[in-house]
Image (cartoon, rainbow, N blue to C red; front, top):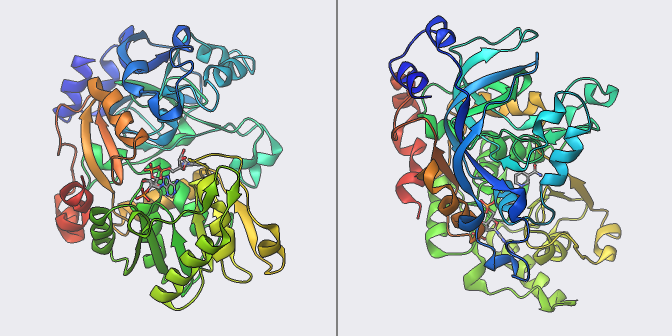
Length: 446
Ligand SMILES: NC(=O)c1ccc[n+]([C@@H]2O[C@H](COP(=O)([O-])OP(=O)(O)OC[C@H]3O[C@@H](n4cnc5c(N)ncnc54)[C@H](OP(=O)(O)O)[C@@H]3O)[C@@H](O)[C@H]2O)c1
């Protein structure tokens, strides 16, 4: 991999990269099947990714005709890597075994180790015989929708395919590694005004927020909509705030500290709620929710923007869902893609049906949505929310920052890139977009 890295850093053309042999093994971050029991008896917050995530050499798999090898320059931590590393809610080896049963090529993924990671920026090294739009030397970012086109349902919306998976979570050979195997239909052009690490952090959460808010598959926000955004400086929320502002909406951002509130104001979000300072207790005890606390949140939102949210951007799950359903406007939409604090959610159905509200589910994004979200990054209309950078050797520490909610925005991981700030090939456009805007989370983040 050293020869490949040196050639990329020297700006070698595609033919030169294609002539460098693919090594037999590569450095990767993975969890091991024989350690599945390591956290037995521990509470979720005691399960430490630093113990379960390993970085070592693993063999290079073959590529299928519709796949590519990419040299990964940088990747990012997503919450799904936290889930895999703490073996919750289920160990991801079951996903690999299911993929293994699907086809001959699927069998490659069913291994006693799982190479994780669902984001990457890098360079195409080789393409399979059926790949037509990409070639060695192309500088790319990777989105994580891992799906083929063999299911008729995939042709309206690829997220509807029965074998739709998230690369690096429900498949092996993810992006937290020096090399990765991806389908050609996961590739998108790298935003050339960004460094490798700035380019690597966007695809998963930016595309998810795009579908949830902008796409007709999600809440299809319109100008003037009030949008309540939980975790508004987190991986999803930091993009959600930008989409609401770009689309002429009114974001109300919820965060849990004064420093996050400042960051949110820097993003241009005028209505900010510090949930730690407000000390909402939506659950009076483990089994009972407290409607008066939902009302207190609703009153706080009205106090800031004068009306109830048309859309609630929901992902914390059990802790907030009752409040989210309650505070949404009559006829409003609660769009949800996750349940970080617990997936057995509870809400008062009377508030849903009597006020004709809807709950809309959303999951990642199809290729078109991911492409549009990446296009907005390339146009400088959406900024990366990179706040911290770790080397691959410290991937466990990086994942634990996300697990324990110590981070803001997104954390990047350098794979082949030897340092920060490399890979920018359009500095003029970077100047035009504005260094301050591009690096806001890096400068002001924790
Ligand atoms: N379905 C999909 O396609 C998809 C895609 C991406 C992510 N996800 C899921 O979405 C969730 C969020 O992902 P992310 O990348 O945004 O994570 P993140 O970077 O950790 O941000 C989430 C934020 O939510 C807030 N939060 C956490 N627990 C909360 C609670 N109990 N009550 C209120 N707010 C809470 C925190 O912000 P404050 O502390 O500042 O309030 C946190 O920073 C994860 O569960 C992830 O797996 C799903």
